[in-house]
Image 1 (cartoon, helix red, strand yellow):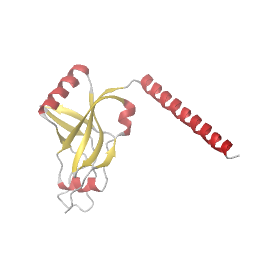
Image 2 (cartoon, rainbow, N blue to C red):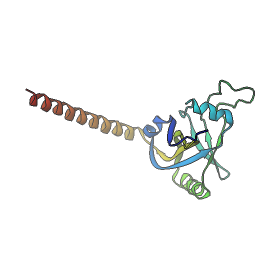
Image 3 (tube, rainbow, N blue to C red):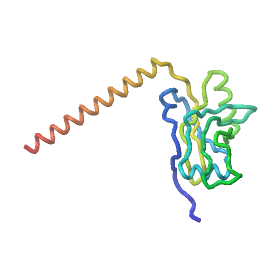
Image 4 (tube, rainbow, N blue to C red):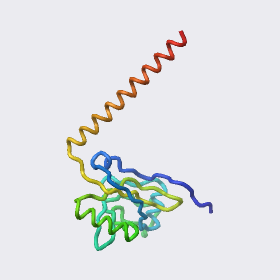
Length: 163
């Protein structure tokens, strides 16, 4: 059997970048059952309500929805079970300190296959206030408007050259 190479994204949490300010990211492995991996290979997962917690020196991913494998039998997994994340001890100690001292949150940004293994991109994040979200939206809209204006000007120049 040929091993997979590269990175294949399964699911992304797009709301996370809107609701949180991302301070740092970590790549973590996930402890999964066989039917969960088969369901992920079909691209079926949702990070919408997912978050991570640290309990007894271990990092746990909660709220991740991996639907049951449609060809699974009685050995199928529970869709919203708590899953353990695999990180180095030093990374876990650093996360424990930052989450407790600075009141930060652990948010999963994406779930992907990296050379055939399921990985989770975990972010250390701070929640945004509503006025922060509004300024981000205003900046993004201004950037889009500038790009549109440049595009229109470039099209006019090309049109004028062909006359």
